[in-house]
Length: 72
Image 1 (tube, one colour):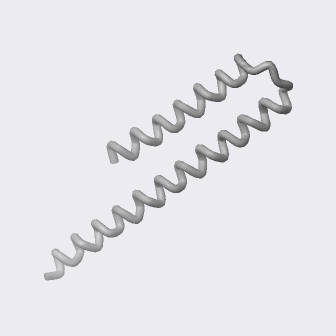
Image 2 (cartoon, rainbow, N blue to C red; image 1 turned 45 degrees about the vertical axis):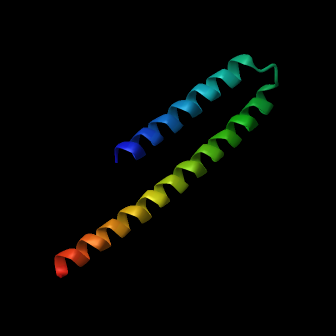
C-alpha cells in the first residue's frame, strides 16, 4: 500500500503543479490552456486507473495464494 499511495500522491501532485505552471507560463488563449489541461488530466486519470487495476490484480493473486495455504 505504501508504494501505491506514494504513486497516487505523486501523480496528483505532479498534475497539480503541471497545471499551475501551464496556466502561469504559457502565452496561449484560455481555451487552448483548458484543452491542454483537460488532456493532461485524462492522461493522469488513465495512468492511475491502470496502476490501480495492476495493484488489484496483484493483491487478488496474493489473496488466492493465502487462501490456498489456509485450505491445505
